[in-house]
Length: 151
Image 1 (spheres, helix red, strand yellow):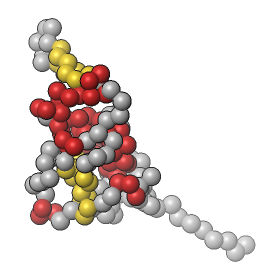
Image 2 (cartoon, rainbow, N blue to C red; image 1 turned 45 degrees about the horizontal axis):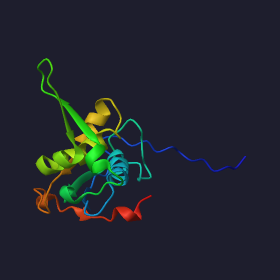
Image 3 (cartoon, rainbow, N blue to C red; image 1 turned 45 degrees about the vertical axis):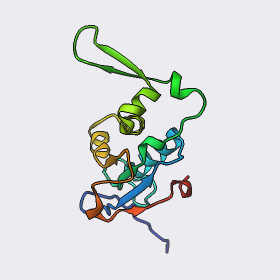
């Protein structure tokens, strides 16, 4: 019998093609931006996606302070942290976190969308978030992308 046979391509560390991508967060909604960035970090937009391999790209997010949230989330959304001492739980609204550390808003939402295991921790290291339009990865020559082109 003459049939076509296809081999399943499984990526590994040596066959992965990693790129540096630049994303501008200005005017983007937080959750939509975070889900697309998490997919890019994971490698889901690539044809040779393999679930157990870090086959995603490195992502640089700039203008984190110009992110947008819908509704009353700026005042009602709470971010919790723990100092390490008894009774040391602290909470801050999204507006307060934006004033002090605007990168943490994007980092926290992207981290929550990655796998909760060692692979997820490795993928999170491929994300760089900066508050202004300047970033420290000019040497990698990142390619600017428009997130509205991705589903």
